[in-house]
Length: 398
Ligand code: MUC
Ligand code: MG
Image (cartoon, rainbow, N blue to C red):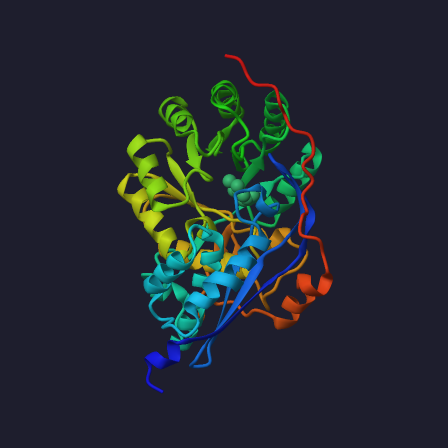
C-alpha cells in the first residue's frame, strides 16, 4: 500500500447523542435542557480513525439544520460521496460534498472535521499544523449567563471569577420585553462592575427600531460587545448600528455564514466583529476563508460556539489557534454546560483562558463508552427538545 492509499476513506458512521445540560439554557427563541450533537467516525484505509461533530441549538431553532437533518444528509449523501475517495485532499472532498448536497453546512463541517482528524492522526500531527500553524497558545474564554434569573446569573459569574475561569460574560437576551431585558442586564452589570467584561447576544430577536432604541441603554449599563441584535437578513440595520452606536462593538453571528456573507458585511461595513463558528461556515477550511475576509476588511473575530462537546470545541480551538488579525477571545464553553463529556480529558482552562490543545488530530481522546452511553439509538429519546416559552411581541417606538 503506498502512502496515498492509506488516506483512502474506507468507512463512515454517524450517530446522534443526547446529553443533558447542567441547567436550563435560555435564549431568545427558547430554553434548552439538552444538546444533541451528531458525531461522525471516519476510518481511513491506513487504519486511522477520525472524529467530527456538529451540534445545533434547540433542533432547527437556531438555523435550518437539526441533528436529524444532519444525520440524514451524512448517511444518505455526504458519506457515499467520500467513501472510496482520497481523504487527504480536503478541498476536493468539500467539492464532492457540495456536488452531492447543496447547503447543509453543519453536516459538511462534521464530515470535514473527521477527515482532518483522521489524516492528522495518520501523519502524527496536530490539526493546527495542517491548517497553517499555531499563532495563539491560549484564548480568553467567555461564559454565557443564561439561567434567566439575576441571582443565579450573579452567583454563576462570581464562582467563575473566583475560579479564574472566566471574566468575560455573555448574556442571552431577547426572550423578554426589551425594557425587562435591559433591566436584567443592568442589574448584572452593576454586580460585575470593574470585575468583568459584559457582552450580550440578542439572537436576532429585535427589529431595527427596537435595537436603535434599547442598545444605547445596554451600552450605558456597561455592555461592550453586542451580538446579532437583529434578524440575519437585516444588514441595513446592522450597518446603521455599526456606524452610529458609540461605545460598543457590533458582532454578526447568524448573518455571517459563507465567505460571500462575509464579503457583503465587509463591503457594507455592517459589523465590527464576526463570530466564527466551524459548523455554520461548513468546516475548518471555510472558517479560515471567512476569517481571511474579516482580516482584509479590518473586522475582528470571536471564537464562537454551538455548544459542542470537547470534540467539536477542540476542533474549533485548533482552527482559532491559527488565525491572525484582531480577536475578542472565544466562548468554547460547551463542555462545561453539559453534564458529561465524550472525551477522556478536557482542554485545560487557566488564568481565564482556554489552553489550546496539542497532540495528534484534535488532541482529544474520544471515549467509545461515552458515545454508547449517550447514543440516541440506545436512549430512545424524542428529537424535539426545546421549551419555546413566552415571546416578547411589543415593537419599539422611537
Ligand atoms: C449563539 O448564537 O451564539 C453560543 C453560546 C450560547 O449560549 O449560545 C450559542 C449560540
Ligand atoms: Mg450568537
